[in-house]
Image 1: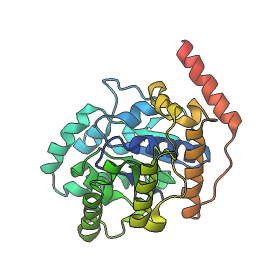
Image 2: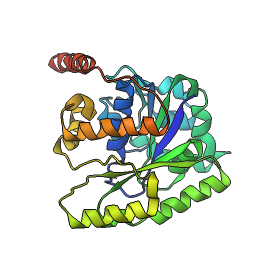
Image 3: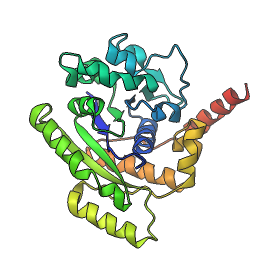
Image 4: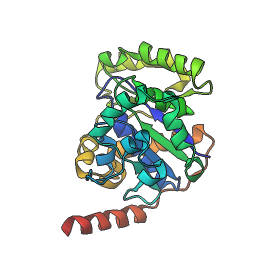
Length: 278
């Protein structure tokens, strides 16, 4: 049965989507069956793995609204073991629709129940808010992953986020845990970054992953090409960091994995190049 992990932080620009799709891609390349749920109306996770937002695309909005099942909305990505349920701007209307539904906090949990056996990990990329979509994700999840940018302002709102997690545990999902905290966009040359990192470690303790994500231009470039960093530039520092983060996540969960086959990555890249040339 798949483990459901929500990636959430109500502050935008902290590397939430970047962490979700790149961690998911490396897990898939390590032979884990992974499903990404794009729950952000911006749809950045969708475009970040190369899914085109056509008019006939089934999305999370259709799932929430009851127009299709979650299984019917699943899309294959370039990576064999990596699937995604996409999102478009239409999903913004789901917040309004959910308000009127019975059991509105458990709509996504009920939708996911039918595919749990098909995946090892289900990763939910949330919008940068603590609205009903995020509440739904946390109600459905086993744990929450919190990416935090190593800047002073990133610390603001953490108390609100953790209060939301506490309320979800108390009223909707008593088994919800903090999977971990990931430090992103970290520049070790800055004294402020060191101070913020120290503060985060003091607050979360062993929940903070040892692996941090450095500031890396290749990570910033990859989404515009519709590719996770594993495909866009496997040798970059960003790719190395997310690979190590995937290993650390699996080890924390006492989960075995297969080494990544670089031949497979090269074959995927060759097929992408062929599509681009057509």
